[in-house]
Each structure stands twice: as C-alpha cells, then as structure tokens.
Image 1 (cartoon, rainbow, N blue to C red):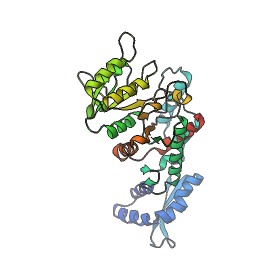
Image 2 (cartoon, rainbow, N blue to C red):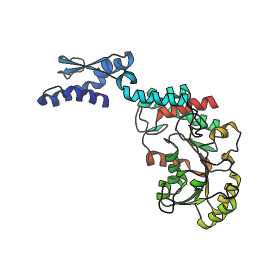
Image 3 (cartoon, rainbow, N blue to C red):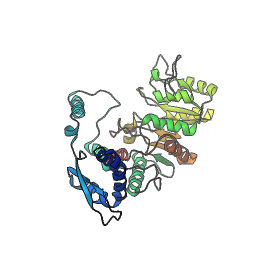
Image 4 (cartoon, one colour):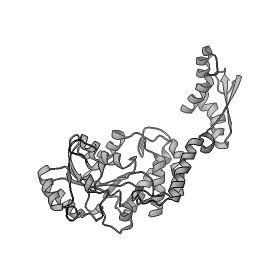
Length: 361
C-alpha cells in the first residue's frame, strides 16, 4: 500500500488539481487484484523498467477500461552506483580504506559475504512485531521458522540446555539490549553496579562523572561503579564486595570493554548471592572466545548474559540476550524488548545472525 501511494502521488502531481481526488481513489480498490498481480509483481520478478498506472473507470475488477496511461521510470531495480553515485562513491572509498588499511580496532570485524547477503535480503521488507506464533501482522510463518531456528542455534553455539536457558535474538544492538535487561529487572531508579568506564567498563554499565550523568543507564537507574586496583590494574573484588554491601544493588554487571584479564564469574556470583543481587554478564567483546571454549564461560554463574555478535563472532551488530529459565526472566525481558523499547525486529539482521551461528556451530 505504501508503494502504491508513492506511485499515486507522482501520478496525481501531473494531473489537474480537480482530478486528483477522483483518480487517486479509483486506483486504490484495484491494488490487491490488478496492480499487484500485473504491475508490481512484474516489476520485482522481471526487472521491468517502466510501471504503467491506469486511470480505472469500472468498479468491477474483472471489467475495467483505461482512458489515460502514464508511464513512469522505475528505479527499484537500478544499482546504487546508477541512482546515487555520491553515496556509492563514499561507500567505495570506505571499502578501499578497510581493504588497504590495517584494522587494529578490537571491537570491529569483517562479516562474511553470506552474512552481507542476508542483511540485504527480502526479509528486510517484513514487519514482524511480536514473537514466534504471536505476531501482530500476517504472513510471518517463515519469519517464525527462521527466528526459532536462530534461537536454537544460539543455544547450541554456547552449549546451553534449552530446558535451563532461553534467548531473545531481537534486540537491535548492544546498548538497547542492555537497557532492556535493566528495564525488565530493575524498574525505575533500580540500583546496579558496573565496572567504571575509565577502568575498562562500558558506557551502558552506568557511567557518569562528578559533573554529569553520561549514560542513559545512570539517568534512569541508580548506578555505582566498582574499580580496578590502581597498582595491579585488576578488578578489586574485595572493594567490590564492600561497596555492594553498602549500596545494595539489585543487579551487578560482570562485563568489560577494555580489560585484559579473565573475569572471575565465581567471585561475582558469590558477591551477588551475599547482597541479594542478580548477576548479568556482558560478554560482548569475548563471545567468540566463549563459544570456542578458550576463555571462561559466564553461563555457569550468571542469571542473564548479553552479547553483541559483530566483534569476535564476525556477524553484525545484533545482540542476543540469554536468560535462565528457572528465574522466570524470559517474559519480563521479552516484554522490555517488545513492545517496551522496540517495534518490529530487523529480520534481515536475524538472518545474518542465523547464518553465522550455523558456521560457528
């Protein structure tokens, strides 16, 4: 319908003002029967360059006549370099920069061709608000099939029992996914603790300065940082425990963005149990290493685990959120992701995630 409205608007601009309403109205009833079947479908299936829009006079879809025929050049099948050379040139320059340069940014990576194909596939066109078997739009049977398979592969990738863990693959990226967890677990002004940003933490773990609250996490929730020992550069778990006993957080985050040592998830969990907090592990930077089994896994200790997939997993900026089923977090986090913070999921990105999980697995 949106596509037809674009065509109708272009058509009406070329008609006399007093004919616009009549001609726009008579086209709409024929969209599902005639225009979609004979024009729109041909445009995509055969790559036709011209789309004919007819002035329909009859009300019966099987019997119609045309008084005028207006042909418009379609750009739906044009290559980017032909329809927007400026944007194309910028993209080509960035591609050359990546190929010819030496990339030393640890949080970047190069997805495969198959993942890039998935990101630009027809799944991009589909609205799929909701979750499998509970969508708000029709025509989602294949979307459900793909998303359920993606969930199974995510659990397999990290060797998780589906009876103990569940996963949400819809968050758009890392920051909103973390925020969805906070929204689900903490509620307004709930308390959390994360590693301070200057000590190797992440913005979304509650960062603020003496003069300003930087992250939205520190705006909508009460956050208290824990720090590294200035002499050793290691997380000071004793100081973390003392701070947690005083602050009484509901959530402690075991996650880093710039820290060169393994995290002791056992110590984190022990502190959480002592103060009555949940443990969330943000393994965004090391998820590929966790999947490969070469670094300690947080799943044996954490109540909730989040990760991006475009770093060491080489996929794209997508973020699955894993939750232990026994704590009944699933419904709360699902609700926080949609409809709490997001609309329709990016199914093309989920397709890219599905593809790469299959390769890693």
